[in-house]
Length: 202
Image (tube, rainbow, N blue to C red; front, side):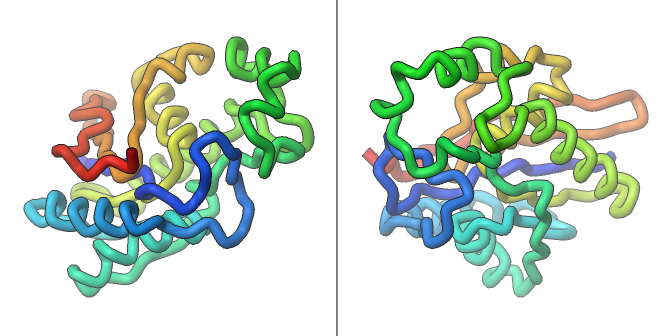
């Protein structure tokens, strides 16, 4: 049995209505650092074999809180990177709300490519391929994967056989934990969006 703990990075220094995407320099906020500290405490009972993080600063900073306490390295996995938001990177929801392509992305996401960016099915393929590779590589045990909201949604949708067009129904909060368990009998989901009352950014 292998367990994959899918962790969304903690809260960031960025307005909630701005698409940060893969923009450099998006760091954890003061609240985000507190969330990451609390997350480290929440995970103390877990036996963790490896820690992998998205290349984005906010994911690496979240991972570092956990890794430093455990004296473990953080391995960077490009498969955990944020969706490539292409031409939408840095835009606000207000700027996007009237655009038909944005509306299509939020209603038929499975077949709507972001201009200059990714399809969500491509995101799902890369994160699922990473989990399957790590399952074969690590075997039994628990692995931490620190990533981003929609990347985690896509992974959960894959293992739930859940339509990508409905993935927005899955709430994935900052510093939350969702757990995918892989066994010989198939996958199962132990929890989704567990936060144990971590501090809110609001």
